[in-house]
Image (tube, rainbow, N blue to C red; front, side, top):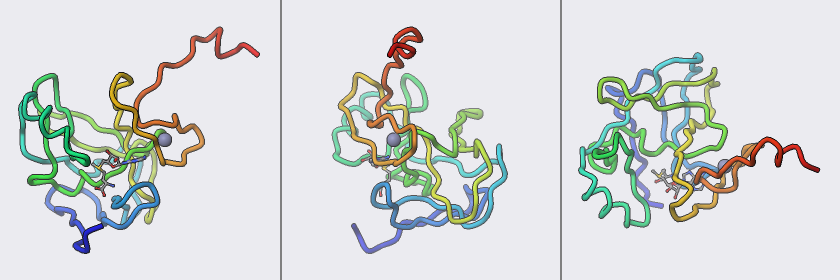
Length: 157
Ligand SMILES: C[S@@+](CC[C@H](N)C(=O)[O-])C[C@H]1O[C@@H](n2cnc3c(N)ncnc32)[C@H](O)[C@@H]1O
Ligand SMILES: [Zn+2]
């Protein structure tokens, strides 16, 4: 891990946040104060890149790309607010909403000071499987989405 601690761009954050080593993966973003439920947390910023460029940059072993729509994505490794260091969890405490073309993270429940912020990356089921280290009770086992068993199958046994 590089010794330089990544920083949060306070102009893009609605809450005091800090980047620290995470038990999930490398760096993570943590609440430096209590966050009420359904509160704006931080905007995800980055270089706006096309589908073609996204495909190229996704080949990097670690990338910071958030898909905005079927054509555009934001690469948080260039001009990122610090939100690009938020790790994935299968039972996350924040969610992304696209508001007028901006990616905004909101809390989906009250978050206590010191908690790590997590979001569900929703990696596609068809993409290369990435084992998940979120540790949540209902962890899917992979960051990728998995098909839910049909109700009858789920009740069997
Ligand atoms: C945008 S980075 C997140 C920030 C990263 N922790 C860092 O320090 O650069 C996304 C990558 O972090 C890793 N990651 C995030 N959440 C994870 C999780 N729950 N389990 C395993 N790896 C995770 C995966 O390699 C993923 O592709
Ligand atoms: Zn998980």
